[in-house]
Picture 1 (cartoon, rainbow, N blue to C red):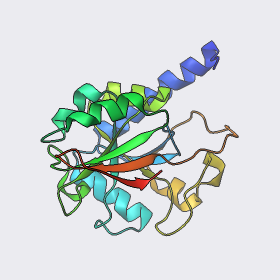
Picture 2 (cartoon, helix red, strand yellow):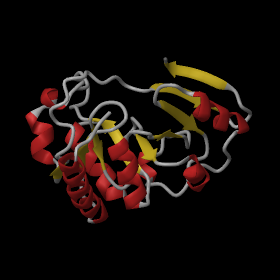
Picture 3 (cartoon, helix red, strand yellow):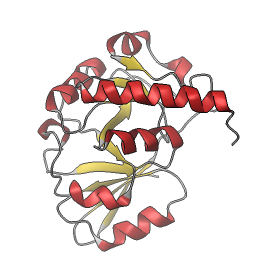
Picture 4 (cartoon, one colour):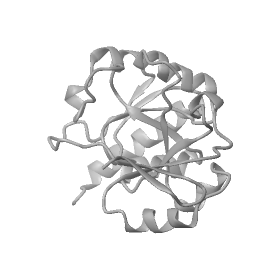
Length: 197
């Protein structure tokens, strides 16, 4: 894909603003490697709760986080099964892996069984956002709970847009319909359960 200089300027400016909002405990609406998402600092329980409130969703439904590198996985998972590295390397589409033994994340982000879904993003904007923020970022679909997840920016509900602190001004006009990631649950012993293909 070709980006002109203007595209890079817009991305850099909006990256700076998004990082600033995340550092202040705010909630952003941003493009990811799958669909548009709501994001916040995954270590900030107050910010995480705001996303639950915006989505009108109970916090018994866990959300996933994005990181930019597999090297950071061990900072948020007590024990990463060996097979995880192969799954990450060989996956041809975005892959969310649910790991047991979450650590160093907001308590209200972690599922009742102590697990957490983590995806390593390869998409340009969200990857750079994670790199610059230097912490994991919550990524959950930008929709009210029990409504259809938007496949493009134009489909996002105005109530969502009106309740975030910053809307990323990048990739808003894309016409390509995005799809959600594959999801698997990975036990410490290497057992795999496919949640969504």
